[in-house]
Image (cartoon, rainbow, N blue to C red; front, side):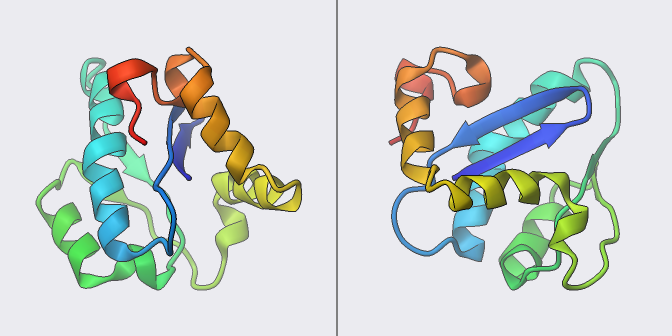
Length: 126
């Protein structure tokens, strides 16, 4: 699962499919999920966008750094090493894992019409 949230709203939730989540998959989600929903929410309002992510190698690999280099209007906030607990969405992922919700999350994406869950029909990726 890939998702993001904001203090005033929730972002899109997407199923990244089976297998290990890699830096390349993260780059795909940045372009396919994060960027369109962030642009719709923030750029229409003229607000800057700041992103908090931990220092996992997935988020700091060369491909990801290159992607953010091509999108300088997204500011990455510094984050201490090995501190995922400082990123609020990590608590969501932890609860999902604790209660074995990833498969339920995939079901929600397919069945729930709420736009924060990835939209339905053509907007939902399988």
